[in-house]
Amino acid sequence: MKKNILISLVVLLCTTMTFAQERQIKEPAKVIFHPHWFIQAQAGAAHTIGEAKFVDLISPAAAFNVGYKFAPAFGVRIGVSGWQAKGGWVSPKQDYQYKYLQGNADIMADLSSLFCGFNPKRVFNGYFFAGVGLNHAFDNDEANALDTKTYEMEYLWKNSKNLVAGRLGLGCDLRLNDRLAINIEANANLLSDKFNSKKAGNCDWQINALVGLSIKLGKSYKKIAPVYYEPETVVTEQPKPTPVVEQPKPKAEVATVEPMKQNVFFALNSARIRNDQQAKIAFLVEYLEKYPASKVTVTGYADVNTGNARINSKLSEMRAKNVAEALKAKGIAAERITIDFKGDTVQPYDTPEENRVSICIAK
Image 1 (cartoon, one colour):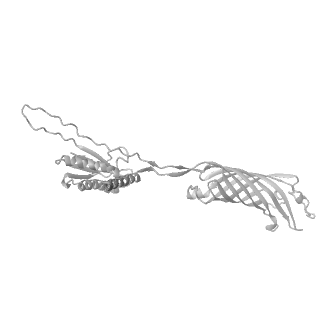
Image 2: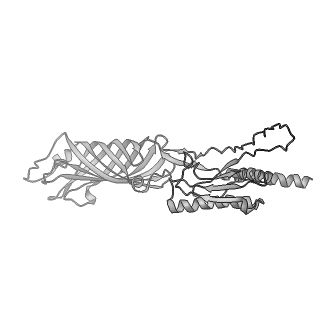
Image 3: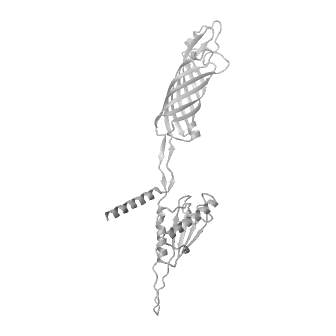
């Protein structure tokens, strides 16, 4: 006895688990972008293009930025950069340094999200930016003290100099966790020819290579749970009470048999009878066994909003045949079953989900 009870409990548990696994998902779970603020702290090296050797014109550089990412692929930032710049005099060979600070405003494009889609767990996130800056150069005493022989430096400036800069660059964030990333950036700043105090007939270029840390100041994404279809309620039409008509002479009572209708619904692009629809098959079998003279018509349908006419015709046929086979498996004779299918040419109901159906009418 105990063994039978245990087996029954196991069967019930398996049936419940199967039903739970077959819940139909209306909208899958997803991760969506969340707008957020961020900061960047950077340090590295700068190079002001000039006539001296490349290594002679390398100087320290630093930057600090505050930005707002308003879309998965786009953001803006403002910041301040600067420290030291260098210039060189060819004959006699002399180097000189001066200092500067530059306020910047940039528009940023997240290249990884733009071309590969949003993914908050991606390790490498490359970006491009372009913007403008206001450069304030100062402490130019070394340039003013150069031994230039008889040559006069036309663009030599004292005290300070304010210049407008155009800028662009590339960078990347190497993700450490949801808030922190290692930042690597290279940028070029286009300045007036007067920046390094020498007249060359072309703009001065200053290039920066920086490494630092990017910090997100809020959540950059949020998770959306899946949405499921509401479970269908099985509705059984009960036969109405048979009226008894009294006759002057005793006669046998004539029972009026009410027809039964059951809608067996299917999943998208499927002709398999789901577990939650098996009760409807059982009601049909019970009706047909109770009324041996009754027959059943099974008509398959398909949703016109998916697939095409050929596929939907075949799908509706399989849905009708599978219901018929289920009835035969329960002992209903094949000659009592009529099979029909409409493909997507007939839509008996208003919603796509209800049109994925085999309508069974027994009478």
